[in-house]
Image (cartoon, rainbow, N blue to C red; front, side, top):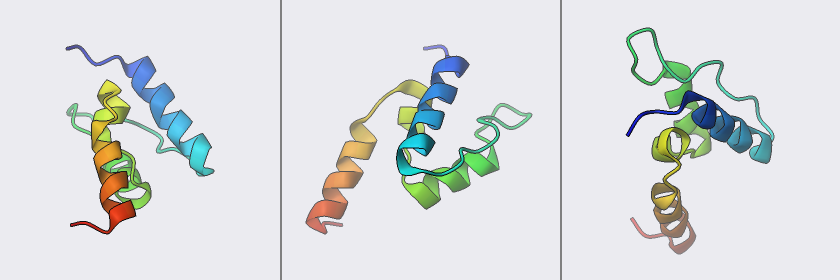
Length: 72
């Protein structure tokens, strides 16, 4: 599956807008890996790389459920 950068940037912006923060400035580093600022954003705010890059919400649903039920 090819990465659609426009869709990924739109999902990242949507997530940031929804929680009221600024999005990271870039998705990818020069070598094509996720940019450090994107990784920090995901850790800090709970965004899923799978959702940002691929539109896959399963990871966010599982994490939300785990947090809501206090399950580890």
